[in-house]
Amino acid sequence: MAIKKKTEKRKVCFPIMNRVHYARNKKLLGMLNKHPQVELQLVVGGSVLLDKYGERFLPDMQKSGFTVNEALYNVIDGGSHITMAKTAGLTALEFSNSLHKLDPDIVVIRGDRFEQLAIAMVAAYLNKTIAHIEGGDLTGTIDESVRHAITKLAHIHFVTNEDAKKRVIQMGEDPKQVFNVGSPDVEFAASVDKKLDGSVVNEVGVGEEINLNKPFLMVMQHPVTTEKNNKENMELTLKSIDELNMPTIWFWPNSDAGTSEMSKVIRYYRESGKLKNNQIRFVTDLLPEDFIALLRRARVLIGNSSAGIKECSYLGVPVVNIGSRQNNRLRGPNVMDVSHNAAAIKRAVHEQLARGKYPSSDLYYKPNCSKEMVNILNRVTLHAQKKFHS
Image (cartoon, rainbow, N blue to C red; front, side, top):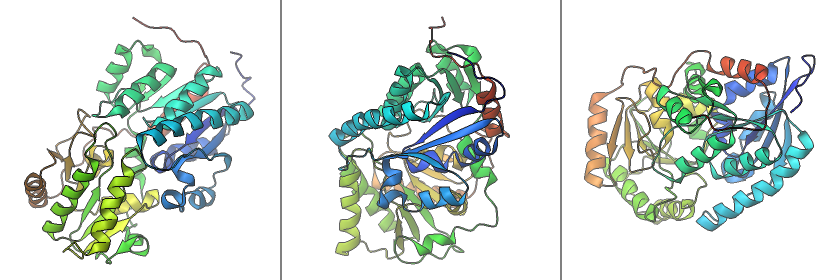
């Protein structure tokens, strides 16, 4: 692949197919956007373009100075395994056109979502250099297989910890192209203005207003795509939180397979009057800064979100992690793991409430994470062909 002249800007394409791709990389995106030698190309699609998930994100992108170069309407709604698989196929078709049109030097792919695997495949076939953020992590779902597959398609690897770095190298990747930069998610969380209090949560969603000056819980429980009991697990968590009878901010599940049945459970319990606890507020999403401001004030985060593993490790927020979704992911002492058992969930929440805040951990945090990533992206040699390193 021909190398651009030093006087030309390096074109870096960043696909955003989910709200976390924007929220957790906002600092990195800002630095790429302002770099004099980089032309940032944003391709936005997936749930970000669905009103129920992303109604606040596009206006925030524009307000923050970002330009959306391409929009992909690539979601087949339904929240099932078949719609997830078809969405991945449609993503490959749509992104092929966008990538051919934009002709970037590098495609930066974050994480392990099914749309990102389709994007990695397209970028590889179009001979683009691929940089992957967060390879080498372990989890308990199909996401881990997707993440490893993207690793094998990628040329540059931005890992978040030493264990992940070892795994990526173990998979035959060039050690010279594997960089432990820490987590951009955690770096962003550390940078959010301490004056923000998260009070905007009472302007969105449905349910009772939450007094943020008093102790409150947060719940983030998403589908586990390899399991068939997402409905029952959501019912169990709802009943557990209901019986705890504390002010609670509950975030809607993400758009993976299983979300429809989990969402139905929330609607049924909320609208049928089965919930005795009238102190629960249900929220679809918050802008990145508002979410972190709220998270750092929560007494306990409950559910199966990676935010409990990564951001909360730095913020010191106690976590009750339910089920298998985060299995084997590197975690700090702030995380208490429990099964889908009502008594165990309630007991763990009480223990974490009594324990209070944990010391801040640098497990995933490295200063200047985004700056280092931008420097690497700007100087790395572009190449399309890979070879296995023994």
